[in-house]
Length: 416
Image (cartoon, rainbow, N blue to C red; front, side):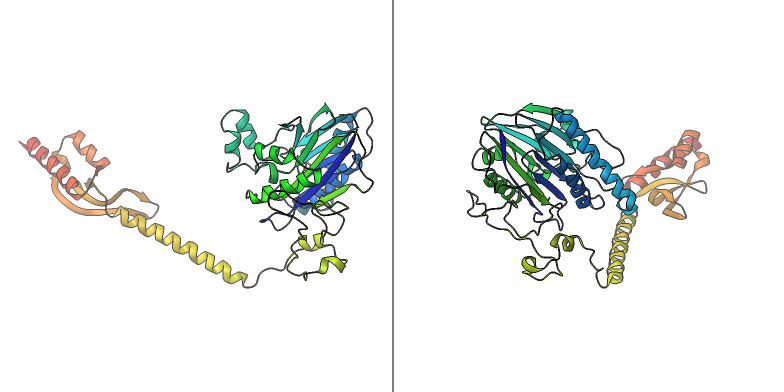
């Protein structure tokens, strides 16, 4: 059997650079997602895909052994680039690898990119996320739906970083004619529900489905890069015009091309009209139209360092002034509240009403004597005197005066 495939990677509507990389060929499907927040996630994902794409040849019998070896080599290559440039320490990427031998699939997986199987009208998730929220789902503490909005949904527990040398999940399954395999970054599966993915994957060609999945992810509000690979298992070989596809940060070719990077016409969607050709947004220093003739790689421009903004010192002063103002407001509000509080305590052996709170900060007193009464602690019982020395909270000034009156009456009783 043969694979008919398509691949597309889109930077999305929020991120400035694409940290996803993907590859689709006659034997191999893989998606790597540079872990957000890490140093040069785009470099990690593209390095991994460039290493993994060497798998794209007819496999031998040891399908999983080849997948595991390729994942380890990708990890070693990341370790090499970090050793060459220590500033890259911390870069990492997910990796989901699907290797086809004509009759079965071998899968290697690490991170939170995913692989799905659409077979006979049903969609099944093949991989298991290595994330903090997935551990909460496994423990029954949250649902799959709740995980989509969890504040720690992007926390990855396992990734290729060249340091920890994590072992990937490995498994295989038989292929059937009519199967459709879907591999994606979390920009798609983290936004779309299983029902939405099933609806799109159940119709159309791989080209059609890949475009629709990306379009639907962006329209559903994905704030991440989105990479989708769709491949059908068929008994007939694909046309000669279907070439291996390299997309995202790992792409070697200029990015102004049809969405999936395929040789051939444009892809069209069925729900919102023609998705057509979506050219990349030129960088600030690249004139519109430069992609067609300029030999400069637009990906290099996209990731090129940018000059620091002007008047950075003024921005820092303004931020500091705002923080100082907020601090002053908080302290003033706290002081105002404290001066509306009262308690009864001891001052020089006299029962005294204090204004403020019965506490002190280093070098700062948070209360002061408000009314010194003529109730003498020595004329009270030992228990009452000790209670006053420890401080007696009052709801307000009237409540504090009532407490003093009670101790004045007790003083008269003790004296009588």
